[in-house]
Image (cartoon, rainbow, N blue to C red; front, side):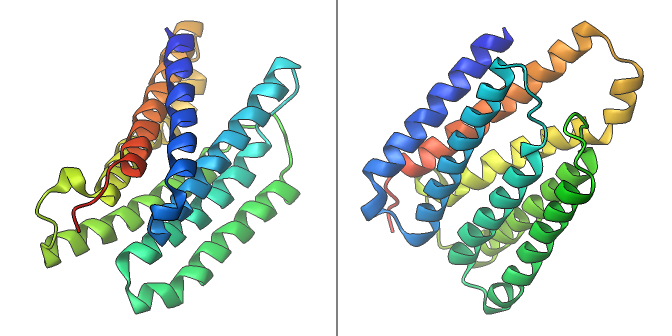
Amino acid sequence: MLDTIVFIAYIILALSVLVGSWRFRQLPTNLRYLVGLVGLEVITEVITYTLHTYHKPNLFINPLFIAGELWLLALVYDKTLHYPEFSRVRPWLAGAFVAYCALDFLLAPEVARFKPALQLIESLLILGLVALYFRKLLHELRVTQLEREPMFWVSVGLVINHLGKSQIYLFSNFLLTHYSHQLNLHIWDFHALLLAVLYSCYLVALWIRPLN
């Protein structure tokens, strides 16, 4: 089951890259940054899969990807929200997190160690960005058809993905203490399903043409 879900997720991710590249010139600035993020996802997955195939450790890639993902998502939401206050804070906030990821990568370089704290912080920051978007959506009420709003799909995908992954990070110590092969398979099934949902939302966001 895991292989099937992962394969489907990779197909959706590849389609997202193709659609994003095809429509790049027609996309607004925020979605162009999203195309960059999808490209980063592809590069990371290729490197991770290659290292795994050759039985090399690949967990050291996580801090690098997390830093890039948050930086690009901060740009996506900065160009979406158009909040001057956020635009001023965004480089410092994202820069501080990137610096934290770099320090974690350099000072704690154990390549085989899972680092839930770093990923949990990223999830909380991303959920904060999404909360700002939904706050703007509710206050302005300019969007009449949410299904035609690309950033709505992006935000829904991020909420589902990061709320789900946060449960894994929060209970990681318990999961490691009560480790079993069957439990590990269920966790990876859940993780792969979350990625498939996220990539599907990215694909829809890059495919649809907003009404406004």
